[in-house]
Image 1 (cartoon, one colour):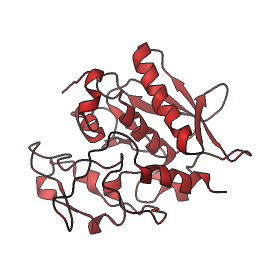
Image 2 (tube, helix red, strand yellow):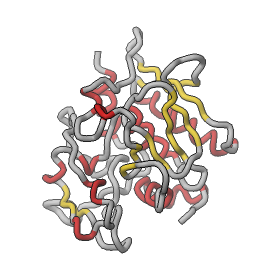
Image 3 (cartoon, helix red, strand yellow):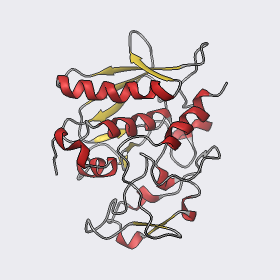
Image 4 (cartoon, helix red, strand yellow):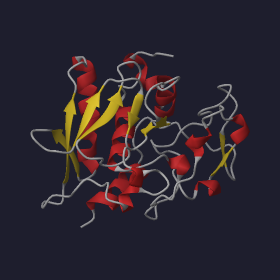
Length: 242
């Protein structure tokens, strides 16, 4: 279901991703993660342990080049740049327009919203479709993937915080709930993370819950519209420590 950018304030990131990536064909994605071209960087093993981080410069900043395709409107371009620039306010990450760098993010409007996890090498697609993906929080979500972060509900310790109800998951989408041997850096599980999907993500009927919080089944999750403080802390722990 397509929604206009003007409806941004009414949608969570989880809802935006669910709408935009409904019935995607062609590229193999897990939720909104493009499956890596590099077999050593698959989700079974966190790529940050295998060399997918972006390098730190001598000034302790991490500079990530990007190119934005020219098919966005001025309003869409401003919003994407706002998402890119938001990382510089509270982390050492600096997204900047590419000149001649070999490795860079190529932000373009393909089908749906998705990104690879971590630095892949050369031109690396971040898809932000004009039909449903150009939202502030969704831009942050996909950029966090590109920096090497995975979904919160796939954390190695997720079973202590949410219960996955596989019988309610759409057939063929069970892989989106695989646990990953994540590097959690001592940070708490975060229901408010912009990387957390909502309670009906990949539901077989769009209303039966595929996840419930534990032990408090009434706890709310998957409602973020921008990065949480924990999301910011994790960037700083992974990239910005001296």
